Length: 423
Image 1 (cartoon, helix red, strand yellow):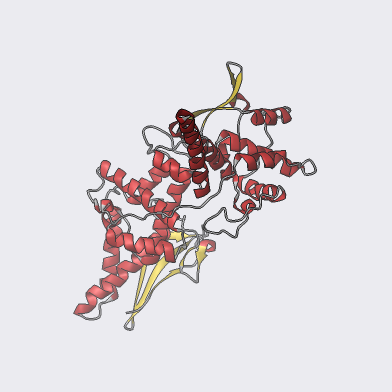
Image 2 (cartoon, helix red, strand yellow):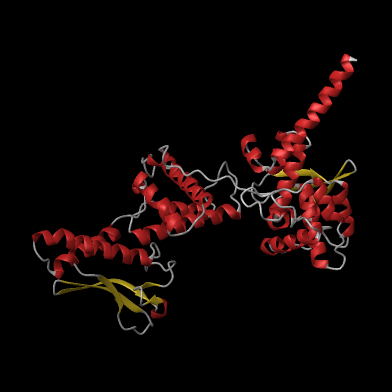
């Protein structure tokens, strides 16, 4: 059995070259042209594939590299089938390739898993009529790329009817070993894949329900993160950064986030019309970018002081920067303010607190601090957007020491009352 290779013909007047398949075996040679042209500059000779996986066939319906993979697979399978009857002639193998091409041309292309995911990516398929956030659309794109890479690298045909436990085992191992993805990323990948397949069943595209098997599941790992106490937030707020305007701005925006409980994408981009007055008090009132839900958050005295400090700005806040840059600067802010306690991150206790802080620490600090103060969980969830109390409790960061202190306060209050009744 030989190897299937792909080459380019000499470029024609349009500058395009025809791709052809060549298969040498047992002293014979098959040459097969299947009508696909490409700019030679887009061809990777060492891999005999198109440089960009986004390059499509002439009709724009399929990945060109996927077509090359399929043709190679058909050719090899044809050889293995025909060799049982003796060494096949090139014309015999060619017939298999022609049948494959004609089969694809002759049928009306039905929905595929990839085309369904494209509809999710385009925002066409919504949940309860709500538009998906840009982050969700990016996640759909990531899953699509992972599936295509898996199919290309393993030659496992991916579509509705091929998704079973065997696929699940192969796919998750591939994501872990070849793509080096974290357990939580793989878990999210599998969860979204099940969303796509469930939609396919609802649409009548397939009756394959193997994805609902209890083993078709990838549990994520509990993430480790920190929060800042109110005392630490105030120490940060009172630290003198007057000599460094950049750090001063980042500190103020971070503290603002700690007291409003929004995601960075929301608290860094508050618009002037989202700062409203109700019965003489100031509130932040906006539709969140991720969940598209209305939230109304009161402004505490520190938030009002920040508004006063940046009154010359349209939105009364420091100028925002990218999330990545903000994460870099907020670590510098916390380091300079000497937030250097160790042991706050259980998975890496040698890390100092400032190393563990990011833009999202502000939102987590808001939720955790108000929870520890006894503010009703159901009300906090209206701001954080968590749908269940379990999800909210997994999100906040309450340490064993926090729990012990709350229990101690409870004991003091109750025993004080009991002693008064006894007296």
